[in-house]
Length: 99
Image (cartoon, rainbow, N blue to C red; front, side):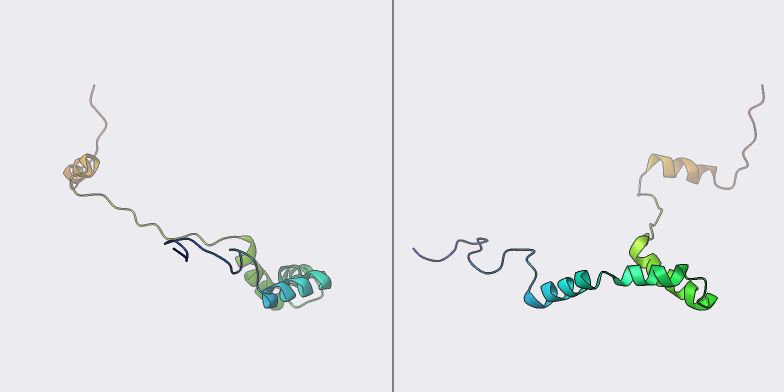
Protein backbone atom coordinates (compact mmCIF):
# COMPACT_ATOMS: atom_id res chain seq x y z
CA UNK A 1 0.00 0.00 0.00
CA UNK A 2 1.44 3.35 -1.04
CA UNK A 3 0.98 6.82 0.39
CA UNK A 4 1.55 8.34 3.75
CA UNK A 5 -0.12 7.31 6.96
CA UNK A 6 -2.48 9.71 8.75
CA UNK A 7 -0.43 12.47 10.38
CA UNK A 8 2.75 11.50 8.52
CA UNK A 9 4.53 14.10 6.38
CA UNK A 10 6.60 13.18 3.39
CA UNK A 11 8.60 15.56 1.27
CA UNK A 12 8.28 19.31 1.18
CA UNK A 13 10.05 21.87 3.29
CA UNK A 14 10.98 20.93 6.84
CA UNK A 15 9.02 22.73 9.54
CA UNK A 16 10.63 26.07 10.43
CA UNK A 17 12.68 26.38 7.24
CA UNK A 18 12.24 29.90 5.80
CA UNK A 19 11.12 30.39 2.21
CA UNK A 20 13.26 32.32 -0.29
CA UNK A 21 11.67 35.71 0.40
CA UNK A 22 12.09 35.39 4.17
CA UNK A 23 15.67 34.17 3.81
CA UNK A 24 16.48 37.06 1.43
CA UNK A 25 14.99 39.61 3.84
CA UNK A 26 16.96 38.17 6.76
CA UNK A 27 20.15 38.25 4.69
CA UNK A 28 19.56 41.89 3.70
CA UNK A 29 19.02 42.94 7.32
CA UNK A 30 22.14 41.05 8.41
CA UNK A 31 24.18 42.63 5.59
CA UNK A 32 23.06 46.15 6.53
CA UNK A 33 24.19 45.61 10.11
CA UNK A 34 21.26 47.61 11.47
CA UNK A 35 17.95 46.10 12.54
CA UNK A 36 14.78 48.18 12.96
CA UNK A 37 15.17 47.89 16.72
CA UNK A 38 18.75 49.15 16.55
CA UNK A 39 17.58 52.14 14.50
CA UNK A 40 14.76 52.98 16.92
CA UNK A 41 17.14 52.78 19.86
CA UNK A 42 19.68 55.03 18.13
CA UNK A 43 16.98 57.64 17.46
CA UNK A 44 15.79 57.38 21.05
CA UNK A 45 19.32 57.95 22.41
CA UNK A 46 20.22 60.80 20.03
CA UNK A 47 19.91 64.03 22.05
CA UNK A 48 20.00 66.15 18.86
CA UNK A 49 16.59 64.77 17.81
CA UNK A 50 13.43 66.51 19.04
CA UNK A 51 11.96 65.14 22.23
CA UNK A 52 8.61 64.07 20.79
CA UNK A 53 10.39 62.04 18.06
CA UNK A 54 12.57 60.37 20.70
CA UNK A 55 9.50 59.52 22.76
CA UNK A 56 7.77 57.96 19.73
CA UNK A 57 10.89 55.91 18.99
CA UNK A 58 10.99 54.72 22.60
CA UNK A 59 7.30 53.81 22.46
CA UNK A 60 7.81 51.81 19.26
CA UNK A 61 10.96 50.08 20.56
CA UNK A 62 9.29 49.12 23.83
CA UNK A 63 7.11 46.56 22.02
CA UNK A 64 10.25 44.70 20.94
CA UNK A 65 11.99 44.86 24.31
CA UNK A 66 9.19 44.53 26.89
CA UNK A 67 6.33 42.09 26.28
CA UNK A 68 2.80 43.22 27.00
CA UNK A 69 1.12 41.62 29.97
CA UNK A 70 -2.25 39.97 29.51
CA UNK A 71 -5.19 41.00 31.63
CA UNK A 72 -6.04 38.43 34.26
CA UNK A 73 -9.50 38.16 35.66
CA UNK A 74 -9.71 37.51 39.36
CA UNK A 75 -12.67 35.57 40.54
CA UNK A 76 -13.80 32.58 42.48
CA UNK A 77 -15.35 29.29 41.57
CA UNK A 78 -18.79 28.27 42.71
CA UNK A 79 -18.59 26.42 46.02
CA UNK A 80 -15.12 27.68 46.85
CA UNK A 81 -14.78 27.59 50.67
CA UNK A 82 -12.62 30.72 50.75
CA UNK A 83 -15.15 32.61 48.66
CA UNK A 84 -17.90 31.45 50.99
CA UNK A 85 -15.88 32.65 53.98
CA UNK A 86 -15.38 36.12 52.53
CA UNK A 87 -19.00 36.28 51.40
CA UNK A 88 -19.97 35.61 55.01
CA UNK A 89 -17.81 38.54 56.11
CA UNK A 90 -19.53 40.93 53.72
CA UNK A 91 -21.27 43.66 55.65
CA UNK A 92 -19.38 43.00 58.87
CA UNK A 93 -16.58 45.05 60.33
CA UNK A 94 -13.37 43.44 61.39
CA UNK A 95 -12.27 44.25 64.93
CA UNK A 96 -9.22 43.05 66.80
CA UNK A 97 -9.88 40.13 69.11
CA UNK A 98 -10.57 41.15 72.69
CA UNK A 99 -8.34 39.48 75.23
